[in-house]
Length: 341
Image (cartoon, rainbow, N blue to C red):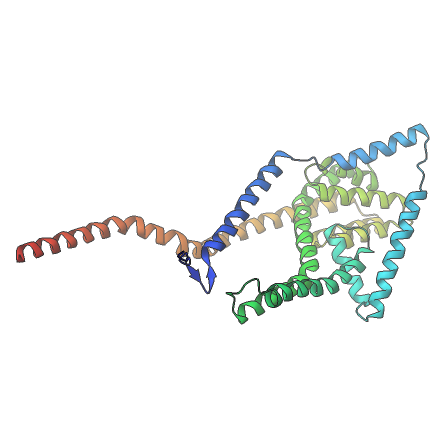
C-alpha cells in the first residue's frame, strides 16, 4: 500500500485542508445569507405586540400577577450579588471598571446594568476555560502533530486573547453598529422634531411622535426616543431624561441635541429654530463624511489593484504573446535539430 503524496504546504500548513475549511465557511455564509434574506423580520413587530397586549390588559381591567416576576427578579439579584461577592473576594472587581462596562453595555443597547458583573466574570473565566482547551488540544492530546512549538504557542496565545478580549470586543462592535444606525437617522429625526415643535406639540409628545414615525426605518433611534418620551413623562426632573439619552448613545451629535434641549427647557428659547440649525449642521456633517470616504477610496483601492487586478491584466495581455513566443522558439529548435540531422 503506497502512501498518498502530501499536498502543497505553506509555512507547514496543508493548503488543501485550509481550502476545504474556507470552502465550508463560504458555503455556511451563503446559506446564512439566504436564510436572512428569506426571513426578514419587522423591527417594530415585537414592540407593537407588547404594547397592544398591555393595552388589552388595561382595557379588560386585568392586573397581571407580578409574583413570578418579583421572584425571578429577586433570584436574579441574588445571583448577581453572589457573583459580585465572588469577584470582590478575588480582588478583580473595581467600581470604576464596573461603571466603564455599564457604559459600554448602555452604548450596545443593553439596559440592565447588572450584566456588567457577568461581563467581568466572563472575562475572568473564559481565558481559563479556553486556555485549558488549548492546552489539551495543542500539548496533551497532540491533535496537530505537524505543528511546531512556535505555531502551538501562537495558537495557545490566540485562544487566551480571544477569551480575555472577546466580551469587550463583542460589546464594542455592537455599540459601533448601533451608533452608526442612530447617526444615519438623526437628521431626519431632528426635522420631524422641528415640525412637531412648530405644530405646537410638547417635547415628550414630539419625541413619542418621532419614535413612531422613524421606528421602522431606524429602530434603534426609535427605541431611544420612545424611552426618552417615557422618562420625560415620569421622571421628576426632565433634565435627567435628556442626560440619560446622552448616556445611552455614544454620539457627539446626540450630546449636542441634549445640550440644546436642556438649554431650551431652562431659558425658554425657541426650540424649533435651535433644532433647525442642528439639523442643517448634521446634514452638512453627513455630506462631509460621505465626501471624505469618496476621497479616501483611491488610496484604499491601490492595494487590491496592485495585488489582484494588475497581475490578471498582465496575464491576459502578455499571456498570448508569451505562448506564441514559446511556440516559435520550440518550432525553431525542432527545425534546427532536424536540419542538423
